[in-house]
Length: 208
Image (cartoon, rainbow, N blue to C red; front, side):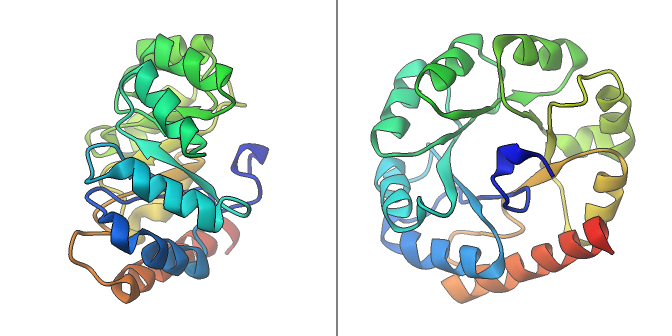
């Protein structure tokens, strides 16, 4: 496992639509289940409040940050509330550069080899293949074969409990998991139940 993940499983919980009042309870369930990386997309309600609350509660032993980060100003805002992870749906060299300058972790979204190599050249820490479901494991494997081996690749979009093993066999280092682990309206207990299923599937595939 890459040191980039700081000893955590390379499973990123994507909490799109999270209500900030529920952030700590849901974050606690995720961490208890074995997730150590949490992303709150910026198109959620009051995302900076959620990120700040999660960072205050869990930042000493988890990686907390934002998704759908599109501008350098948004990078600054996330860092101002102690969010470290900066995830984008696209590859923007200015966002990558600002993230590095501010001491954050840059996980830009890419889809093509051209985008992937541009992101690596710009200094990203990991690559988020999105939407991974359109590539499938075989498509990601083909692109991964030509990328620098030290750059972790995460599959985001369409990853399920039964398919984690296929993605790992294709060379992905980890996963961003959204609606399969969190939906608006789910209780913290429901999120925890789904998270435990993903952790068990990952552990079985990675170490079984």
